[in-house]
Image 1: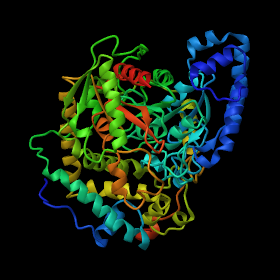
Image 2: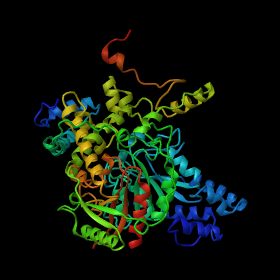
Image 3: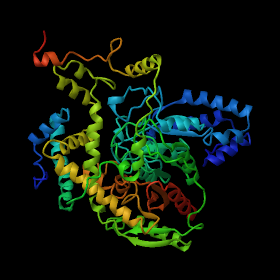
Image 4: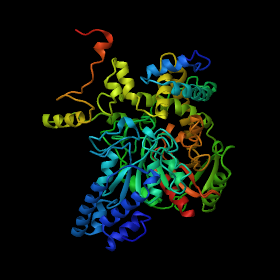
Amino acid sequence: MGKKQSGPQVSREWLEKTSTLARLRLNEEELQELIPQLGQILDHVDQLRSVSTEGVEPYIHPLAEISPEAASVALRADTLRSVEEQIHQATRVLGVAPELTESSFQVPQAVAQAEGRSK
Amino acid sequence: MTAHPPSSIETLHNEYRAGRCSVREVIEGYFSRMKAKRALGAYISELEQSALSRADQLDSQLLASGLDILLSKQPLWGVPVAIKDNLHIRDELTTCGSKILENYRAPFDATSVSLMRDAGSIFLGKANLDEFAMGGSGENSAFGPTLHPFSEAHIPGGSSSGSACAVAADLALVSLGSDTGGSIRLPASFCGIVGLKPTYGRVSRYGLVAFGSSLDQVGPLARNMNDLITAYEVIHGHDVRDSTSAPTPRTKIHRQSAIQTRRVRIGIPDEFFVEGLDSSVRAALEKTIQALKDRGAETIPISLPHSSSAIPVYYVIAMAEASSNLSRYDGVRFGTRPEEASFANSLEGFYSGARALFGKEVKRRILLGSFVLSAGYHDAYYRKACQVRRLIAQDFQRAFERVDIIVGPVAPGTAFLRGAHSASPLKMYLNDLFTIPANLAGLPALSVPVGLDPQGMPIGIQLIAPAFQEETLLQVGLDVESLS
């Protein structure tokens, strides 16, 4: 861990790779604007390297720190619900889909075409 | 209805009690002001029809039973409210200020929303916000900016820009907002009203669209401390539908001065009175602290040595959590699916086509979040930030061994001009210096107005209390309010 001594070179290549990870497509104008902006932000973040954190346990979530008893009630009661109620809920959830068939979310055929695995 | 909008819940209830106006007349008054002041951009959607029919229902309730019987069960009875547009009201739009949710109708109520409704309040509309609550100025909404209620050249503060503007401009009496790094306290301070970020886990996040899940907290904004306390009492409490909700009992806040009833030790952190703090903000805070001292409070200098790391820690963690939370916007189950996605010929093209609807600030944060969580960088950025987060939380723990409350500024300055920071996101982030630490440590924090700068822009003071000590926090808030 923590082998790198300085942040990444915020280059066009770095940004293109990062935008692929984030599933965001950036146009030329966005690329030009973001390279210096993100570079500036990461430079600022780099000041954390000078803070000594040896042996410090990461603080992941406030609940475990300020309300440890919450973990004991984090699970809902395991109660039976009627089929009607479940169908009703599922219908409401499906109702906000951009496109749906009778009982499922619908998406354009994308995978098979892209990877040539159809048929 | 009298020409003047009510200045508090109590004055509104007195109007109802005396029969000087009906609920319908009050709500009609709010909608006519909302229409006249649409240019402020306080609301994304107005709920006139449902609000008026609810007003009629309440008017018939009032005929059937007296107001005081109704108020004993419903403390917000007949109170007009704005709801930030990242909280769900069932069957109404929840846009989050984003094109990607432009047509999204919530299939359920947020817990805080249903508690507000059960308490008798009337929803006037969904308040504008920086897209997905990301931003400190109110300029980042896909549906246009929110303007400052007293000066159109200035920003109202964000991200709960509409929630603050609506209350300050008499377009709602109380509102709900959310606060991830200062998003309630900052606009409350800039608009001259009060705003509370409760302890993490105090108010259910069920039905709040997630941004930074370890930081987000729902809270109220109001014109005065009494109204704020009433709204807080209504929305807090354990919720089985939010696994991060704290199982602490609901409490009633005793509305009394803290200083006059017991010894109150006020901590003044050196790190909050730094160079770069606007001179009028500093002067207003010093005057307030002196006045609290004159009334019997004890002031103790303290140190929060890791404060300078709060911004980098926050932005690593908030962006990491945002990139993870916002990965759900893939154009499959909800949200808008643009043509571009429908005709993509690859899965990647489908996703990035749908996600092209995000605005600039949201993209910036998703990109940085994806990076700090990526293979090879996770430990150097995310893990490191979480370690420093613990040091920041420990600073507070040590301080609260010696003091009951910590005071400081809400922001380095007052409301700034529109467009002032739009070229530099980093400069905008630096404005969150004083509000972020409370989110990182999960602590309750309050913003209370303490004066105006020479341009007439409101100045707020921030009070921070130990976890779950909202009562002390709100009582000291009453003390600060009583000084003016």
